[in-house]
Length: 476
Image (tube, rainbow, N blue to C red):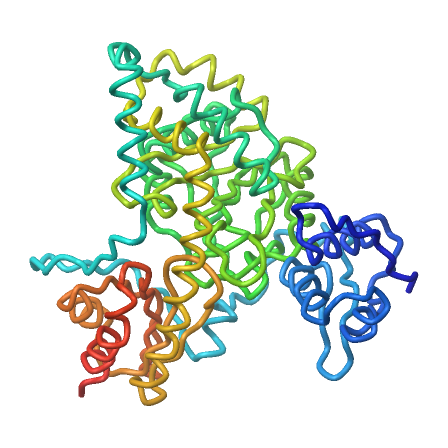
């Protein structure tokens, strides 16, 4: 291939590995490199550029996780084929319905619907270090002390402009989302945002929505309750099966391309372009749920799908509940310009149910840089907890519990070899203050896939908590 000779800016705040990543990525996107062309080895490139092998490895690693390159054992790294033109003749054709490849490799099949215990349970274990409440209190006090008059009127139905501006700024620098404050709608939690979106889609004569399977049931239920037809589409290791999406009918596809819940699958860039082409050719829309995308612990966060959209086909959803604290109900969506104008025409019929005080406090929190600093601290904290959790599971599970998808988010997927019912596993974990939810079950193999939330367990309690959990789950 053409020689890789980037000019590094040594005085830049951007790390060298990121400059190398961007240089190679641009060469791939511009067509300077051909699909399946071999890249220089880590050692050869580090020698020619006079940088460390680790630096080259970080750049290659980020390119690989985003799908720009791929690796072959004993052969090296190669350029991926990221052709933007899919085979549309195959879109919508019926094929075999495999379960998630991630689950299938562990022998975990069959979707568990919903499990919840009506019994009163002890409170969950928590870790107060997960959020800087002192700085948050200062921002709340700033609103109450310096701007009390703003609280004497209702909040903007679209959300406070000061916060919308901060969100737009943050999304561009951290997620590659391109938008302005007028495209952002703020609401009190995911359910209200989903209801707003459902109203807009109905006005656009869209009544069919495809959902990842497995996926996030709460949003799916909200759309179903609003009268939408729901089409489950299997998730593979590279995200939703695009060939299974409907053709020749205006619809929407709800996806989490940067960190699929609960599998953790990442959609590579070639599939992202295919998904965008599907939306354009079928006059359809993509609802991108960027759930926990900032909380990626190995490499940098995966850029958003919205940032690749040139045709106004992506509706971007975000929330602050995982990066601040669970009880703060501030969610938002970024609408394409045409849909934003539609919302402006109907928003007078709605009132804002999201706390104006908290919206303004969050705007100040983001403006001060505390939010960005907090996310960096969370990455370090949760990365450490994730490694500790995996080590404890390996030590105490006797090979009967296998972690899956362990690179991001607040939870990990565990394949559990047990004779117990999924509801029993949920109840036993809750009995010791740990949150877990059943996702899949394979009755034949006696395996259950459990979503295990490790993020709130304090470091010093991680090993003892997991030891108790393993004892409970694996009891005969």
